[in-house]
Image (cartoon, rainbow, N blue to C red; front, side, top):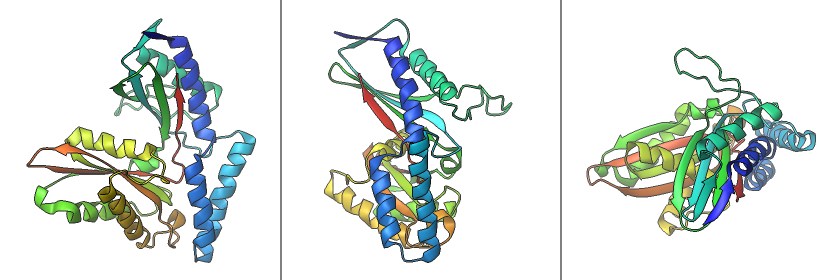
Length: 280
């Protein structure tokens, strides 16, 4: 049995919170750079150039890419042969988030109650998702999610008869209604199947997969490519100023579901789709 201390977990989460908010993932950088070269509209190219300059300056100056440093969404894959020692895993994660957001001078955006709106002042609690997996390692991914793009997410309990065409129509409707609000070019995570709560989790987890990596299922890989083309044909463009780059990628995750259901969730993320991972 491998032992991992809560102190090590806290230190790791602290570091991941800061790095995720400063360093844009390589796949998103490549997509932005490519879009800047292929975009036809002068205004759209100018916006993309500003976005690229922004992420470059953020790295060089060690400052957040965006002023909205997001809710700390933490994805945990805990090996069955791991023993957490010295305290509770959830407490260690939240302490790491608090340290990261305070020490990194990151904006604290979490309120303790959805109605009385009192700020917790350290961006806790984190939104933690746990998966128990094989092995003796602990994998932690911190994915800060901004409020503007999270507000554009949608879920629908479609009918099985709606089929794939119903799924495509719902995804396009969600993106079109979002318009410029989620700061396009966006990355779209789509969940299909499961139940009401499972499909939402699938759509958010989809955002963690590199947009350079198509779905391993050929059917869903083709659907991802088709949806990306359809979204970019909407003409919303970078920051809503028009153009052919409304989305940088579409990732789909799916799960078994009930015979009477076809759940679908659309998780829209802005061009600052941030996440950093560590394995302990």
